[in-house]
Image (cartoon, rainbow, N blue to C red; front, top):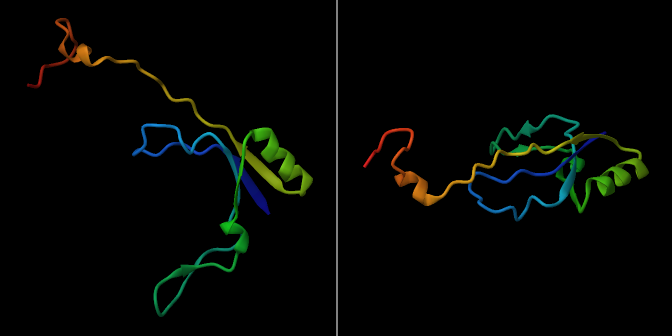
Length: 101
């Protein structure tokens, strides 16, 4: 049973970092999902795929996985580029690009 330890990224609809501060441990799916022939629902008999645990730090998540004998993979978060811009930069005289208004 393989577990992934990662820090979730913020969604495209977020401007803040509300749910990205904790580390998450979740299990990889051991079985493929099956489709119910009558209703078309997707299901699985793998209960571990529903487990998602949050930890305050990466070290706590790794310690939990090692304590319980889980094989795990740590996925480090990628740093985003921050470009600090001011609203007034849109109206500068020597601006690169064309004026669209």
